[in-house]
Image 1 (cartoon, rainbow, N blue to C red):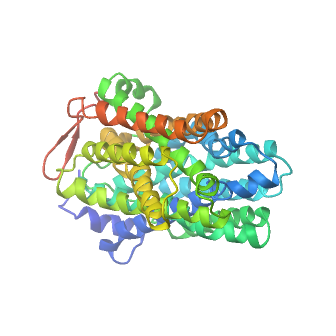
Image 2: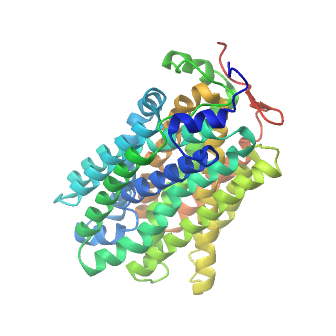
Length: 428
Protein backbone atom coordinates (compact mmCIF):
# COMPACT_ATOMS: atom_id res chain seq x y z
CA UNK A 1 0.00 0.00 0.00
CA UNK A 2 1.34 3.42 -0.89
CA UNK A 3 -0.80 5.16 1.74
CA UNK A 4 -2.10 8.70 1.49
CA UNK A 5 -1.32 8.97 -2.23
CA UNK A 6 2.32 9.74 -1.51
CA UNK A 7 4.51 10.10 -4.56
CA UNK A 8 6.84 7.06 -4.66
CA UNK A 9 9.69 9.15 -6.06
CA UNK A 10 9.35 11.64 -3.22
CA UNK A 11 9.38 8.83 -0.65
CA UNK A 12 12.43 7.37 -2.35
CA UNK A 13 14.15 10.74 -2.09
CA UNK A 14 13.43 10.91 1.65
CA UNK A 15 14.81 7.41 2.23
CA UNK A 16 17.96 7.89 0.15
CA UNK A 17 18.77 11.37 1.39
CA UNK A 18 19.00 12.78 -2.14
CA UNK A 19 18.07 16.47 -1.88
CA UNK A 20 16.21 16.51 -5.19
CA UNK A 21 14.04 13.37 -5.33
CA UNK A 22 13.73 13.68 -9.11
CA UNK A 23 17.49 13.27 -9.42
CA UNK A 24 17.69 10.10 -7.31
CA UNK A 25 17.21 7.66 -10.22
CA UNK A 26 19.88 9.41 -12.28
CA UNK A 27 22.36 9.45 -9.41
CA UNK A 28 21.80 5.71 -8.96
CA UNK A 29 22.12 5.10 -12.72
CA UNK A 30 25.31 7.15 -13.01
CA UNK A 31 26.95 5.29 -10.14
CA UNK A 32 25.80 1.89 -11.43
CA UNK A 33 27.28 2.75 -14.83
CA UNK A 34 30.54 3.89 -13.22
CA UNK A 35 30.74 0.67 -11.22
CA UNK A 36 30.15 -1.42 -14.32
CA UNK A 37 32.77 0.56 -16.25
CA UNK A 38 35.59 0.45 -13.71
CA UNK A 39 34.82 -3.11 -12.59
CA UNK A 40 35.06 -4.23 -16.22
CA UNK A 41 38.14 -2.08 -16.79
CA UNK A 42 39.90 -4.06 -14.05
CA UNK A 43 38.44 -7.56 -14.49
CA UNK A 44 38.92 -7.58 -18.28
CA UNK A 45 42.24 -5.74 -18.34
CA UNK A 46 43.98 -8.84 -19.71
CA UNK A 47 42.16 -8.48 -23.06
CA UNK A 48 44.01 -5.41 -24.39
CA UNK A 49 47.24 -6.65 -22.77
CA UNK A 50 47.11 -10.00 -24.60
CA UNK A 51 50.09 -9.34 -26.95
CA UNK A 52 52.27 -8.26 -24.01
CA UNK A 53 51.32 -11.29 -21.92
CA UNK A 54 51.82 -13.62 -24.90
CA UNK A 55 55.37 -12.35 -25.42
CA UNK A 56 56.38 -11.93 -21.75
CA UNK A 57 55.07 -15.33 -20.60
CA UNK A 58 55.87 -17.19 -23.86
CA UNK A 59 52.25 -18.31 -24.33
CA UNK A 60 50.72 -20.14 -27.27
CA UNK A 61 47.72 -18.65 -29.01
CA UNK A 62 45.57 -21.38 -27.51
CA UNK A 63 46.77 -20.45 -23.99
CA UNK A 64 45.79 -16.85 -24.65
CA UNK A 65 42.23 -18.15 -24.86
CA UNK A 66 42.38 -19.05 -21.16
CA UNK A 67 43.00 -15.52 -19.85
CA UNK A 68 39.59 -13.98 -20.35
CA UNK A 69 37.59 -17.09 -19.33
CA UNK A 70 39.48 -17.23 -16.02
CA UNK A 71 37.68 -14.16 -14.71
CA UNK A 72 34.39 -15.47 -16.01
CA UNK A 73 34.94 -18.90 -14.42
CA UNK A 74 34.77 -17.28 -10.99
CA UNK A 75 31.79 -15.30 -12.21
CA UNK A 76 29.89 -18.39 -13.33
CA UNK A 77 30.61 -20.14 -10.04
CA UNK A 78 29.22 -17.19 -8.08
CA UNK A 79 26.56 -15.76 -10.40
CA UNK A 80 23.58 -17.42 -8.72
CA UNK A 81 24.80 -16.58 -5.20
CA UNK A 82 25.55 -13.05 -6.45
CA UNK A 83 21.97 -12.57 -7.61
CA UNK A 84 20.66 -13.93 -4.33
CA UNK A 85 23.09 -11.74 -2.36
CA UNK A 86 22.04 -8.64 -4.31
CA UNK A 87 18.41 -9.25 -3.41
CA UNK A 88 19.42 -9.64 0.26
CA UNK A 89 21.97 -6.84 0.88
CA UNK A 90 20.96 -4.37 -1.81
CA UNK A 91 22.75 -2.74 -4.71
CA UNK A 92 25.07 -0.53 -2.67
CA UNK A 93 26.65 -3.24 -0.53
CA UNK A 94 26.87 -5.78 -3.36
CA UNK A 95 28.58 -3.38 -5.76
CA UNK A 96 31.08 -2.02 -3.25
CA UNK A 97 32.07 -5.51 -2.11
CA UNK A 98 32.34 -6.87 -5.63
CA UNK A 99 34.53 -4.01 -6.83
CA UNK A 100 36.85 -4.42 -3.86
CA UNK A 101 37.34 -8.12 -4.63
CA UNK A 102 38.03 -7.40 -8.30
CA UNK A 103 40.56 -4.69 -7.53
CA UNK A 104 42.50 -6.65 -4.92
CA UNK A 105 42.83 -9.77 -7.06
CA UNK A 106 43.81 -7.96 -10.27
CA UNK A 107 46.46 -6.05 -8.33
CA UNK A 108 47.74 -9.37 -6.95
CA UNK A 109 47.81 -10.80 -10.50
CA UNK A 110 50.35 -8.13 -11.41
CA UNK A 111 52.78 -9.77 -8.95
CA UNK A 112 52.33 -13.31 -10.31
CA UNK A 113 55.32 -15.04 -11.94
CA UNK A 114 53.53 -17.43 -14.27
CA UNK A 115 50.33 -18.15 -16.18
CA UNK A 116 48.89 -20.46 -13.51
CA UNK A 117 49.04 -17.86 -10.74
CA UNK A 118 47.63 -15.15 -12.97
CA UNK A 119 44.73 -17.42 -13.88
CA UNK A 120 44.12 -18.19 -10.18
CA UNK A 121 43.94 -14.48 -9.31
CA UNK A 122 41.59 -13.83 -12.20
CA UNK A 123 39.26 -16.64 -11.12
CA UNK A 124 38.91 -15.09 -7.66
CA UNK A 125 38.48 -11.64 -9.23
CA UNK A 126 35.55 -13.19 -11.09
CA UNK A 127 33.79 -13.74 -7.76
CA UNK A 128 33.53 -9.97 -7.47
CA UNK A 129 32.83 -9.52 -11.17
CA UNK A 130 29.77 -11.76 -10.83
CA UNK A 131 28.02 -9.07 -8.78
CA UNK A 132 28.08 -6.35 -11.44
CA UNK A 133 25.24 -7.50 -13.70
CA UNK A 134 22.67 -8.53 -11.06
CA UNK A 135 23.39 -5.49 -8.87
CA UNK A 136 23.31 -2.90 -11.64
CA UNK A 137 20.32 -4.64 -13.26
CA UNK A 138 18.46 -4.48 -9.97
CA UNK A 139 19.35 -0.78 -9.72
CA UNK A 140 17.51 -0.16 -13.00
CA UNK A 141 14.48 -2.20 -11.93
CA UNK A 142 14.42 -0.39 -8.57
CA UNK A 143 14.50 3.12 -10.00
CA UNK A 144 12.90 3.14 -13.47
CA UNK A 145 9.39 2.33 -14.76
CA UNK A 146 9.01 -0.20 -17.60
CA UNK A 147 8.66 2.41 -20.33
CA UNK A 148 12.12 3.82 -19.49
CA UNK A 149 14.03 0.69 -18.54
CA UNK A 150 15.32 -0.08 -22.04
CA UNK A 151 17.16 3.25 -22.19
CA UNK A 152 18.30 3.02 -18.56
CA UNK A 153 19.58 -0.54 -19.01
CA UNK A 154 21.31 0.47 -22.23
CA UNK A 155 23.05 3.35 -20.43
CA UNK A 156 24.07 1.07 -17.58
CA UNK A 157 25.38 -1.60 -19.94
CA UNK A 158 27.59 0.94 -21.73
CA UNK A 159 29.70 0.81 -18.59
CA UNK A 160 31.22 -2.51 -19.66
CA UNK A 161 32.14 -1.28 -23.14
CA UNK A 162 33.32 2.14 -21.94
CA UNK A 163 35.55 0.40 -19.43
CA UNK A 164 36.86 -1.66 -22.33
CA UNK A 165 37.49 1.45 -24.42
CA UNK A 166 39.49 3.06 -21.62
CA UNK A 167 41.40 -0.17 -21.02
CA UNK A 168 42.29 -0.57 -24.70
CA UNK A 169 43.46 3.05 -24.98
CA UNK A 170 45.30 3.36 -21.65
CA UNK A 171 46.72 -0.02 -20.63
CA UNK A 172 48.72 -1.02 -23.76
CA UNK A 173 50.62 2.32 -23.92
CA UNK A 174 51.31 2.02 -20.17
CA UNK A 175 52.60 -1.55 -20.68
CA UNK A 176 54.73 -0.45 -23.65
CA UNK A 177 56.21 2.45 -21.70
CA UNK A 178 56.91 0.48 -18.51
CA UNK A 179 55.70 -3.08 -17.98
CA UNK A 180 52.53 -5.18 -18.18
CA UNK A 181 52.68 -5.59 -14.38
CA UNK A 182 52.31 -1.85 -13.86
CA UNK A 183 49.33 -1.79 -16.21
CA UNK A 184 47.56 -4.60 -14.33
CA UNK A 185 48.27 -2.98 -10.95
CA UNK A 186 46.84 0.33 -12.16
CA UNK A 187 43.68 -1.44 -13.31
CA UNK A 188 43.28 -3.14 -9.92
CA UNK A 189 43.69 -0.01 -7.83
CA UNK A 190 41.17 1.82 -10.03
CA UNK A 191 38.51 -0.72 -9.08
CA UNK A 192 39.32 -0.38 -5.37
CA UNK A 193 38.88 3.40 -5.61
CA UNK A 194 35.50 2.91 -7.30
CA UNK A 195 34.40 0.60 -4.47
CA UNK A 196 34.96 3.41 -1.99
CA UNK A 197 32.95 5.85 -4.14
CA UNK A 198 30.00 3.44 -4.34
CA UNK A 199 30.11 2.69 -0.60
CA UNK A 200 29.76 6.35 0.30
CA UNK A 201 27.75 7.83 -2.59
CA UNK A 202 25.19 5.27 -3.80
CA UNK A 203 21.62 6.00 -2.57
CA UNK A 204 20.96 3.70 0.37
CA UNK A 205 17.62 2.33 -0.64
CA UNK A 206 15.04 2.85 -3.37
CA UNK A 207 11.33 2.15 -3.17
CA UNK A 208 9.60 0.58 -6.14
CA UNK A 209 6.58 2.63 -7.12
CA UNK A 210 4.82 -0.38 -8.63
CA UNK A 211 5.63 -3.33 -6.37
CA UNK A 212 6.42 -2.20 -2.80
CA UNK A 213 7.18 -4.43 0.19
CA UNK A 214 7.99 -7.59 -1.77
CA UNK A 215 9.29 -10.65 0.02
CA UNK A 216 12.83 -11.60 -1.09
CA UNK A 217 13.11 -14.14 -3.89
CA UNK A 218 13.88 -17.72 -2.89
CA UNK A 219 16.14 -20.12 -4.75
CA UNK A 220 13.53 -22.88 -4.56
CA UNK A 221 11.24 -20.76 -6.77
CA UNK A 222 13.76 -20.78 -9.62
CA UNK A 223 12.68 -24.10 -11.26
CA UNK A 224 9.27 -22.59 -12.03
CA UNK A 225 11.03 -20.21 -14.41
CA UNK A 226 13.37 -22.77 -15.92
CA UNK A 227 10.48 -25.10 -16.83
CA UNK A 228 9.26 -22.54 -19.36
CA UNK A 229 10.60 -23.32 -22.89
CA UNK A 230 10.73 -19.64 -23.85
CA UNK A 231 12.91 -18.79 -20.87
CA UNK A 232 15.27 -21.63 -21.75
CA UNK A 233 15.55 -20.32 -25.31
CA UNK A 234 16.43 -16.83 -24.06
CA UNK A 235 19.08 -18.17 -21.69
CA UNK A 236 20.63 -20.42 -24.35
CA UNK A 237 20.81 -17.55 -26.84
CA UNK A 238 22.61 -15.50 -24.21
CA UNK A 239 25.19 -18.28 -23.90
CA UNK A 240 25.67 -18.45 -27.69
CA UNK A 241 26.02 -14.68 -28.18
CA UNK A 242 28.49 -14.49 -25.30
CA UNK A 243 30.67 -17.05 -27.07
CA UNK A 244 30.89 -14.64 -30.00
CA UNK A 245 31.35 -11.53 -27.86
CA UNK A 246 34.13 -12.97 -25.71
CA UNK A 247 36.01 -14.42 -28.68
CA UNK A 248 36.05 -11.02 -30.37
CA UNK A 249 37.22 -9.44 -27.11
CA UNK A 250 39.96 -12.02 -26.58
CA UNK A 251 41.35 -12.21 -30.12
CA UNK A 252 40.66 -9.01 -32.07
CA UNK A 253 43.89 -7.40 -30.87
CA UNK A 254 45.96 -10.41 -31.95
CA UNK A 255 44.07 -10.54 -35.25
CA UNK A 256 45.04 -6.92 -35.93
CA UNK A 257 48.68 -7.68 -35.19
CA UNK A 258 48.92 -11.03 -37.02
CA UNK A 259 46.68 -10.40 -40.05
CA UNK A 260 46.80 -6.65 -40.61
CA UNK A 261 50.40 -6.14 -39.45
CA UNK A 262 49.64 -3.53 -36.77
CA UNK A 263 51.75 -2.89 -33.69
CA UNK A 264 50.40 -4.12 -30.34
CA UNK A 265 49.31 -0.59 -29.38
CA UNK A 266 47.69 0.04 -32.78
CA UNK A 267 45.93 -3.32 -32.69
CA UNK A 268 44.53 -2.50 -29.25
CA UNK A 269 42.90 0.56 -30.82
CA UNK A 270 40.85 -1.82 -32.97
CA UNK A 271 39.49 -3.25 -29.73
CA UNK A 272 38.73 0.27 -28.51
CA UNK A 273 36.80 0.94 -31.72
CA UNK A 274 34.87 -2.29 -31.31
CA UNK A 275 33.97 -1.31 -27.75
CA UNK A 276 32.90 2.14 -28.96
CA UNK A 277 30.65 0.46 -31.50
CA UNK A 278 29.19 -1.63 -28.70
CA UNK A 279 28.65 1.43 -26.54
CA UNK A 280 26.77 3.27 -29.27
CA UNK A 281 24.65 0.28 -30.17
CA UNK A 282 23.67 -0.40 -26.55
CA UNK A 283 22.41 3.15 -26.21
CA UNK A 284 20.69 3.08 -29.60
CA UNK A 285 18.97 -0.25 -29.00
CA UNK A 286 17.63 0.95 -25.66
CA UNK A 287 15.96 3.93 -27.35
CA UNK A 288 14.73 1.88 -30.32
CA UNK A 289 13.25 -0.88 -28.16
CA UNK A 290 11.42 1.58 -25.92
CA UNK A 291 10.15 3.97 -28.59
CA UNK A 292 9.74 1.93 -31.75
CA UNK A 293 9.44 -1.72 -30.72
CA UNK A 294 6.84 -1.14 -27.97
CA UNK A 295 9.37 -2.06 -25.23
CA UNK A 296 9.99 -5.41 -26.92
CA UNK A 297 13.63 -6.49 -26.57
CA UNK A 298 13.99 -9.51 -28.83
CA UNK A 299 13.86 -7.74 -32.25
CA UNK A 300 16.99 -5.73 -31.44
CA UNK A 301 18.87 -8.83 -30.30
CA UNK A 302 17.96 -10.63 -33.53
CA UNK A 303 19.13 -7.71 -35.70
CA UNK A 304 22.40 -7.55 -33.76
CA UNK A 305 22.93 -11.26 -34.42
CA UNK A 306 22.41 -10.65 -38.14
CA UNK A 307 25.05 -7.89 -38.18
CA UNK A 308 27.42 -10.27 -36.38
CA UNK A 309 26.98 -12.85 -39.14
CA UNK A 310 28.08 -10.32 -41.76
CA UNK A 311 30.96 -8.86 -39.71
CA UNK A 312 32.47 -12.22 -38.74
CA UNK A 313 32.14 -13.37 -42.33
CA UNK A 314 34.29 -10.45 -43.51
CA UNK A 315 36.87 -11.10 -40.79
CA UNK A 316 37.04 -14.72 -41.95
CA UNK A 317 38.29 -13.59 -45.37
CA UNK A 318 41.51 -12.28 -43.69
CA UNK A 319 41.74 -9.61 -46.40
CA UNK A 320 44.23 -6.80 -45.88
CA UNK A 321 41.76 -3.92 -45.62
CA UNK A 322 42.61 -0.21 -45.84
CA UNK A 323 42.87 1.45 -42.44
CA UNK A 324 39.50 3.21 -42.70
CA UNK A 325 37.65 0.05 -43.74
CA UNK A 326 39.36 -1.94 -41.00
CA UNK A 327 38.23 0.63 -38.46
CA UNK A 328 34.64 0.50 -39.76
CA UNK A 329 34.67 -3.29 -39.63
CA UNK A 330 35.88 -3.21 -36.01
CA UNK A 331 33.07 -0.79 -35.11
CA UNK A 332 30.43 -2.92 -36.86
CA UNK A 333 31.69 -6.15 -35.28
CA UNK A 334 31.72 -4.51 -31.85
CA UNK A 335 28.23 -3.08 -32.32
CA UNK A 336 26.97 -6.57 -33.14
CA UNK A 337 28.96 -8.46 -30.51
CA UNK A 338 28.35 -6.09 -27.60
CA UNK A 339 25.16 -4.24 -28.51
CA UNK A 340 22.64 -6.96 -27.61
CA UNK A 341 23.58 -7.18 -23.93
CA UNK A 342 21.46 -4.32 -22.58
CA UNK A 343 18.38 -5.65 -24.34
CA UNK A 344 19.07 -9.16 -23.13
CA UNK A 345 19.40 -8.27 -19.46
CA UNK A 346 16.41 -5.93 -19.67
CA UNK A 347 14.35 -8.83 -21.01
CA UNK A 348 15.63 -11.16 -18.30
CA UNK A 349 15.00 -8.64 -15.52
CA UNK A 350 11.47 -8.05 -16.82
CA UNK A 351 10.87 -11.77 -16.87
CA UNK A 352 11.73 -11.79 -13.17
CA UNK A 353 9.87 -8.61 -12.25
CA UNK A 354 10.75 -6.49 -9.23
CA UNK A 355 10.82 -9.46 -6.87
CA UNK A 356 12.88 -11.87 -8.98
CA UNK A 357 15.04 -9.46 -11.03
CA UNK A 358 18.26 -10.11 -9.13
CA UNK A 359 17.78 -13.87 -8.95
CA UNK A 360 16.86 -14.36 -12.61
CA UNK A 361 19.61 -12.00 -13.76
CA UNK A 362 22.02 -14.16 -11.79
CA UNK A 363 20.78 -17.18 -13.77
CA UNK A 364 21.21 -15.27 -17.03
CA UNK A 365 24.75 -14.33 -16.04
CA UNK A 366 25.47 -18.01 -15.38
CA UNK A 367 24.39 -18.89 -18.92
CA UNK A 368 25.99 -15.94 -20.71
CA UNK A 369 29.26 -16.21 -18.83
CA UNK A 370 29.36 -19.93 -19.48
CA UNK A 371 29.57 -18.88 -23.12
CA UNK A 372 32.76 -17.00 -22.25
CA UNK A 373 34.21 -20.21 -20.79
CA UNK A 374 33.59 -21.98 -24.10
CA UNK A 375 34.09 -19.26 -26.73
CA UNK A 376 37.73 -18.11 -26.44
CA UNK A 377 39.19 -21.58 -25.74
CA UNK A 378 37.27 -22.99 -28.72
CA UNK A 379 38.35 -20.06 -30.89
CA UNK A 380 41.96 -20.50 -29.75
CA UNK A 381 41.95 -24.23 -30.44
CA UNK A 382 40.54 -23.70 -33.95
CA UNK A 383 43.04 -20.89 -34.55
CA UNK A 384 45.96 -23.06 -33.44
CA UNK A 385 44.80 -25.91 -35.68
CA UNK A 386 43.67 -24.17 -38.85
CA UNK A 387 44.40 -20.43 -38.94
CA UNK A 388 42.15 -17.37 -38.66
CA UNK A 389 39.31 -18.13 -41.10
CA UNK A 390 37.57 -21.11 -39.50
CA UNK A 391 37.07 -19.58 -36.01
CA UNK A 392 35.30 -16.54 -37.46
CA UNK A 393 33.08 -18.73 -39.63
CA UNK A 394 32.07 -20.79 -36.60
CA UNK A 395 31.10 -17.59 -34.75
CA UNK A 396 29.08 -16.44 -37.77
CA UNK A 397 27.18 -19.76 -37.75
CA UNK A 398 26.44 -19.39 -34.03
CA UNK A 399 25.06 -15.87 -34.53
CA UNK A 400 22.92 -17.10 -37.44
CA UNK A 401 21.44 -19.78 -35.18
CA UNK A 402 20.43 -17.15 -32.61
CA UNK A 403 18.80 -14.98 -35.28
CA UNK A 404 16.73 -17.98 -36.37
CA UNK A 405 15.73 -19.41 -32.94
CA UNK A 406 15.14 -16.41 -30.66
CA UNK A 407 12.01 -15.01 -32.39
CA UNK A 408 10.15 -18.33 -32.19
CA UNK A 409 8.82 -18.53 -28.58
CA UNK A 410 5.47 -16.87 -27.94
CA UNK A 411 5.51 -13.49 -26.12
CA UNK A 412 7.27 -13.88 -22.79
CA UNK A 413 6.07 -10.67 -21.12
CA UNK A 414 2.57 -9.14 -21.12
CA UNK A 415 2.74 -5.37 -21.49
CA UNK A 416 0.48 -2.36 -21.16
CA UNK A 417 1.29 1.34 -21.27
CA UNK A 418 2.94 1.76 -17.86
CA UNK A 419 3.38 -1.73 -16.47
CA UNK A 420 4.79 -5.09 -17.34
CA UNK A 421 3.19 -8.29 -16.18
CA UNK A 422 5.48 -11.29 -16.16
CA UNK A 423 4.08 -14.03 -18.37
CA UNK A 424 6.47 -16.60 -16.96
CA UNK A 425 6.48 -15.85 -13.23
CA UNK A 426 5.75 -18.65 -10.82
CA UNK A 427 2.54 -18.43 -8.82
CA UNK A 428 2.83 -16.51 -5.51
